Image (tube, rainbow, N blue to C red; front, side):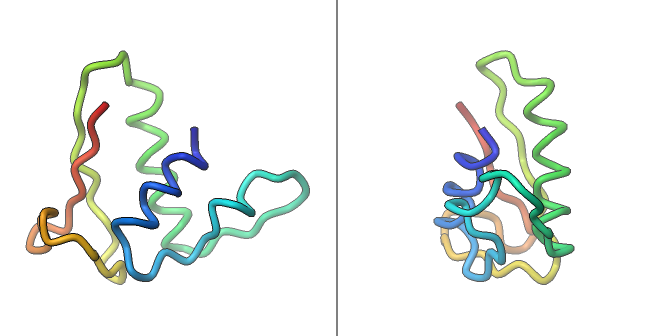
Length: 81
């Protein structure tokens, strides 16, 4: 599920500094502060998800949002099932 989240993030952030293809392949993987922050925030949503919720993920200040449909001013990405 984390890899699917990261693939989705690739379409939303210009400067995602973690490769979904490489993440979780085993062995050691060092996360950058931005990637660690995003995955930690997502973890909370993932553990509370029952199938119909939607969440607003606040992205770190250094993240560059691609999509015009997302809220650049509040620095949030909308996640829904």
